[in-house]
Image 1 (cartoon, protein in one colour):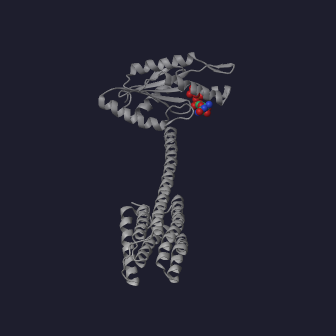
Image 2 (image 1 turned 180 degrees about the horizontal axis):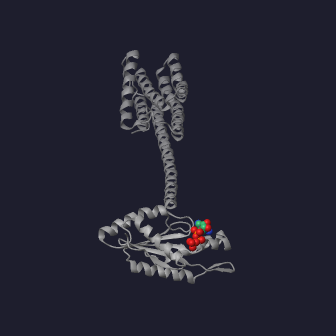
Image 3 (image 1 turned 90 degrees about the horizontal axis):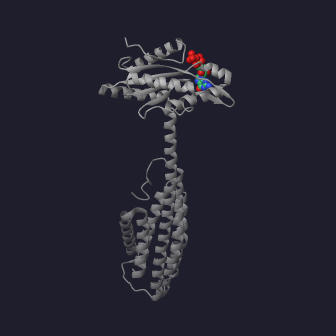
Length: 376
Ligand SMILES: Nc1nc2c(ncn2[C@@H]2O[C@H](COP(=O)(O)OP(=O)(O)OP(=O)(O)O)[C@@H](O)[C@H]2O)c(=O)[nH]1
């Protein structure tokens, strides 16, 4: 894996990736332009000492003053900027090799050019980059030796040596500065990514709650009940334990809506929801089953206990009329109770039995609890 590993990929390129590619190409242009001026000074001092002719000086200016802008121009207009920039870096190495051979391998100059090209490629392609840099520099020296002959004059004057050391030092400082800028950018990107992840997780949690909760009362909805009932029924069936359900309905609720308004009706629904939740056990599932209808799923609860609980709800609800401003709204409820397995062996059968019991409670005058008949 390296900074150029996506260079040949056909995967769609995101905006941020395109921006970072531009950033890399621009950064390389700035560094190349700057460092080539130092290299030019280093080579110029050596060439001055050795008395090179006008052609060599012209080539020196073309290589170190004009070339950085030409290769940037080519990379910036390329369809695959990253790949072209990699080509440019290889070309840098090749040219450095030619200059080394042309100047007869002055030691400090060769060392400086070799290290600069090697570091640049290593930053982009890791250890493979270093090997690649060494290979292209070697090719360059071969080309240079073929054109200018193979000579070795390693000595350099004091000025050239000093300029070589300065060039190398400055180059290393620039690379370190860019590495710092890159780490800061990476850190900021990570922070942004983490914030986005937190946002997505919170939204996911919210969606999960919304999909299983009734918005008015905060109780579970029918969708949740379906899963919970199937799960609890099979658990109780496996362990031979009872399971009771209470189907609870507010009496004459339409009248409350008509007399006190829909908002007061909502307040009555919330009021009963609170009562049901307050007296439920941790294992019970309290669910808003319909408009003013609730279903309590009570795992491991026998019929007698369920009946007693339903009676408690009935008396408590009737004893606490809802205060809506100055008016007091008298409310009652009716309920049908059914227990697994006597009054239904499946979720549907159990709910049907409780519904029939509730219907009987309503028919018998309301404010009543009825127990379901035995399953047929
Ligand atoms: N305020 C309010 N009313 C609702 C809501 N959902 C359903 N309703 C109303 O609840 C009423 C239910 O009326 P019915 O099914 O006739 O039953 P009831 O008046 O309670 O009579 P019984 O059940 O026979 O005692 C209807 O008028 C619905 O419009 C709700 O979320 N808020």
